[in-house]
Image (cartoon, rainbow, N blue to C red; front, side, top):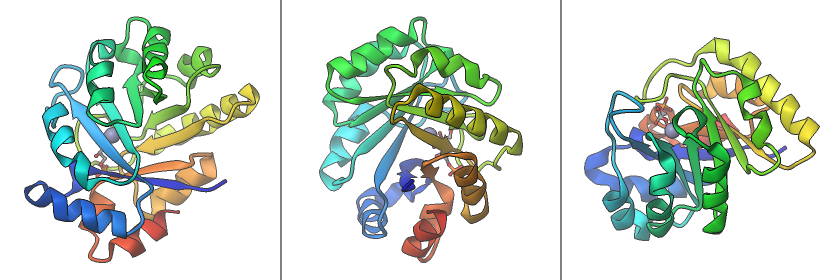
Length: 214
Ligand code: DX5
Ligand code: ZN
């Protein structure tokens, strides 16, 4: 199982985004992870559509948009229009998760469903027939640079088992506190897409950092 790396823009030097994007893509990131926060679903506000629209010309890898917002269905068209390839939303934030998945698919994009640390693996099971990715949060969403929550590892394993049982090819992504050590723990538990913010962007040798995650 190949491991993909999705570098999280939140972890870069935001005063120099174009250069940071150039460096991280040269270092071999597979995807670019774009964290959208609304100050309601999570206690922080990051960036939204205008920024993605402007930086899109500097991005040649798939854009992996992570919506940490309430009522995500209202914003699927907007984030599809500004250049997302994958849109992941939180199951806790959606009234009708299936409708959100269908909406993402109607725009020809891949759909991901995410769970916060307190939400059990079983919550995603009803959607494994249609979803393209499950994102298991390994920190409380809202901030970069937090420590990996070891108690989420069992859930990664459980989700991997559910995916295997489904017989479908579904990405299993982890996000939060991923570094050279926690990456190995997550890969062993069954994750195959690793988000990295501060670890990848703060490294002097970004290629070595990304390689160490795989
Ligand atoms: C946190 C975000 C993450 C964040 C990860 O809520 O979803 O994508 O950027 O940052 P690190 O890798 O620094 O924990
Ligand atoms: Zn994220």
